[in-house]
Structure formats: structure tokens, C-alpha cells
Image (cartoon, rainbow, N blue to C red):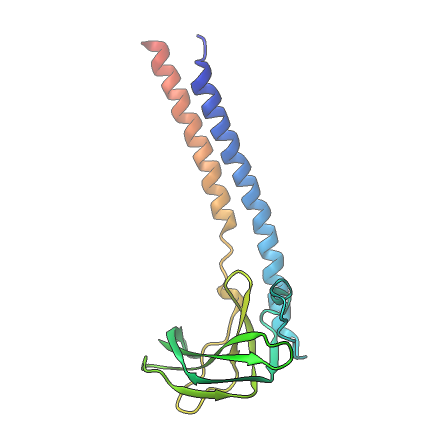
Length: 191
């Protein structure tokens, strides 16, 4: 029996791509494990870290404590969030500008059950640096603003590392494509 050229090339390319993606996910798993280990180590550091102005430098300081001279005032932006006991409600976010290099900083100043905005005025912020988007950083304040409860601390253990599952899915998809193709070839040869 002769294999049909175009379908065989197509299936072989698809299977090779899926296997390559599975191998890539295994590499990403190792990278994520190293990153999470670094974050866990950062949690243990007692020395304050700077909140760097350059976005590429920020990730090295995630999950470290910082103290900033950061000025800003206005009303908070309530967003879904949890308090330190894990209850779901509203985290109240404030904006300020760091005095040293004029970096804009988003600060979680506390939590409440009420989504109503809260007025704030900041001049100094102490808290934990956490990731915020691809290049950003935010700070979760140690002490809540008056009238608010403490928000949940950023926790690197909440960052998923599901790359092994993704790798398994890609390998399963490759195997499934092969099985379907072999069954199609058998059916074709009988016909």
C-alpha cells in the first residue's frame, strides 16, 4: 500500500509540531520551577528592595518587602480581592508616584466588603512588591488605610505551574493524531 503523500506530510508535520510543543512545555516547567523557587527565597529576605523604574528590572524584586516615598491622593479603585483571612470582597487600589524616579505605583491600601470608593492620601508606602501585568509591579501595603482591613499578602504559591499538564496534552494530541491517521489508512486499504 502506498501512503498518500499530502495527508502523510500534513499529519507528520502536525505530530512533529505537537511533540515539539510538548518538549517546549517541559522546558517551561523547569523555568517556572526556578522562578517560583526564586520568589519563595525573596519572601524570606528581610532587607527592603527598591521598586525599580525600568520594567525589565522589576521581576527580580517580586515578593520582596519595600518602603517607598510615594505621593498621591484621590479615591480608590475597588477591584475584586481577598483579605488576609481569604474572604472575597473588594481590594482598594490607590495610585501614587515614587519620588526618586517618578515611577507610577499601584498600591493596594486595604480590603472591604463594600465596593464604594475610599479617599486616600499617600506619602509613604511599605508593603510587598507583586507582579502586575507583563512588565509592571504593584505594592500590597502592610497596614490598611483607616476604615479598611488588611488585604491578602501576595503569595508566590498562588502562581500556577501547569506546564507538565500542558506537555502531557500536547503529547496526547500527537498520539491521537497518529492513531486517527493509522485507522484512516487501514480503512482506506480495506476499501
